[in-house]
Length: 72
Image (tube, rainbow, N blue to C red; front, side, top):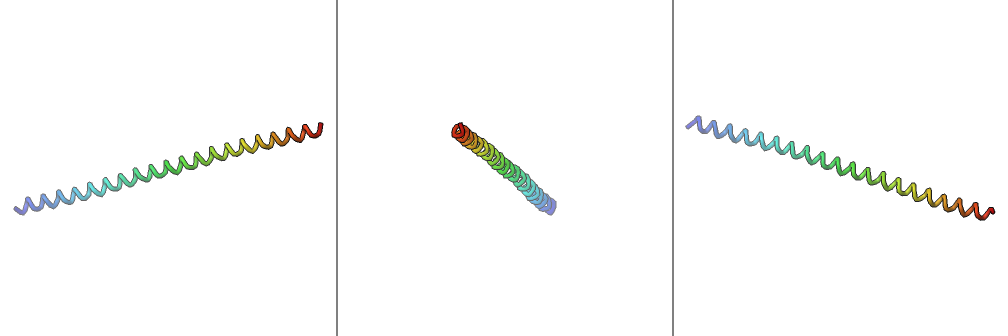
């Protein structure tokens, strides 16, 4: 009887330990996902910045063309 009781307790302890380990693993996985989202956000920001830069460059070019025509 005592042996069975001890075995049950050991099983319960093992179960709790496994549960904790799984929880830690899941947490790590979530952190990885969060990092990826942050990276995507940074990439999008960079892309937008490049697009704006191109647009500004085009605007400047148009303005220069207008000025050169006026001078002639």
